[in-house]
Image 1 (cartoon, one colour):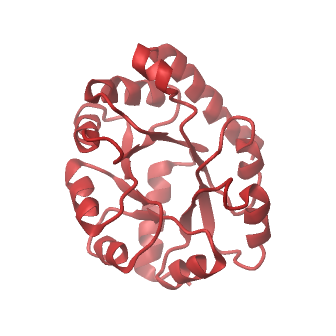
Image 2: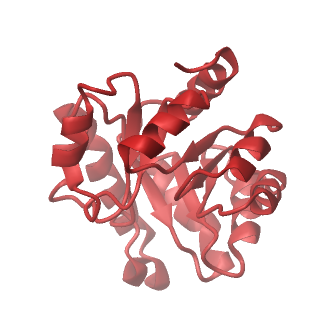
Image 3: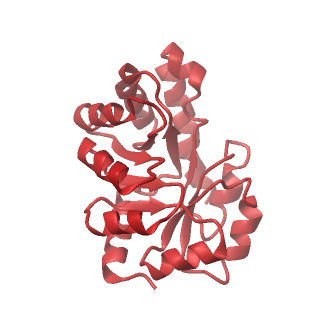
Length: 219
């Protein structure tokens, strides 16, 4: 079961996400695009965003969004080590997302006020995370790991663990995941396509965000 500390951090993370059905997963190559992109997504109702550490300027993107877009809740993704956890937290990340879970990351999260959303896909990984006091997990890569059917099968034997599946999720299958009792939200990049970001089509991205935010009505 979740420890008192773990439960508190889970509650803090859920408060940051605030019932948002889709968490944009962003890979931003041009730092100047970070602020207008975050603003467009927030206007569309997707205030919580995950900026992945997959580009050289990712931390600077997080800094700028944290400083210039108060209406956004910026998190850092693709965190692979305690060092990256610390860097992302210092840059202004309000939550940390990792594709997996390690002792090093658990130790970093324990010593930080910033909540961690680690990835787990097998029953053993999920149970290990649960024993560590974590009952809200990323399920990645979702489609490749068995998709909505796999998560549905987990809902009964591990009923107290909830998920944010990410990987291969888009407008055609997001509702399948959101209909599951153990899924609180999904992560996806379809709300900020690379071509739209590069062209600065912020109104179009805002419209995609509104459509994604409306998925909450299907739950």
